[in-house]
Image (cartoon, rainbow, N blue to C red; front, side, top):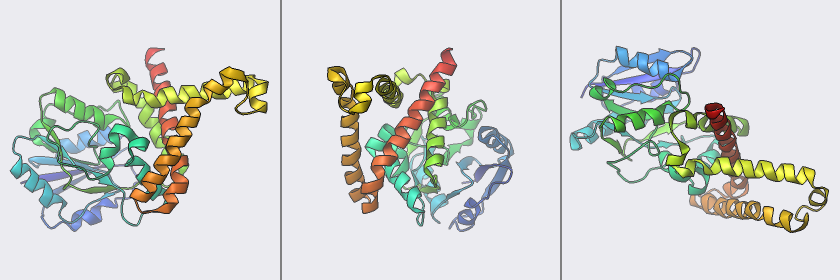
Length: 307
């Protein structure tokens, strides 16, 4: 197997991924670093320089176990009809406190819904889609890239679009839990919210949220919270007594109370699932960071698309 690894990177980005590529048990393989301001353009430039029959896409701050290339080769030998495969992008060992906590939230069904599988090891799926894999750990046969490229008008939404386009072109896409990658998480609440705000903002540009209503829920939740805040400000009796404001105010806060209950419940579940009691205390605050920032970005993206 002739493999090319394409690393899109900013002009001054640190290439921490190189060390784990040097430590691969199977080599040599071609490594291309494509630097620039736009990740999609960098990946496409890397494709033009690639000599391998298989082309892998990773992030500059990713890392991989020493058997990563071996697992790629074994997968394509076992499943020759598959054209594109991706693996889980896990939280790196030794990550900081907030990075670990945000990683727990991303693997949670409550925190990340149907995309949670991207961030943890699941089961082999030979009919995977854009909710299962990302471009931080993505390998394609060269023939795929003769027909499908990364959309340079989208960032950070180019990899779901690429996977959707590949499937629409008739290529077979898979998820393999053995092709493990580690991807650095955001180290602060501001960084996490900015990341998910951008995800939400670009979603309507390449896919109708009506095709997958789960992506619409954070937008509706954001609008609900915004309305609740405006209602509270405009209603003196409600602001004077949080659950006051008459029957209307009492009914309005029921969904919020239900959300808080679920956030607390899943904080306990996900904290114990990851054997980290700190998560029990912090996750109930991290979930709304993800949901509200994604929802705000989604609403803005829809407005920009139709107005």
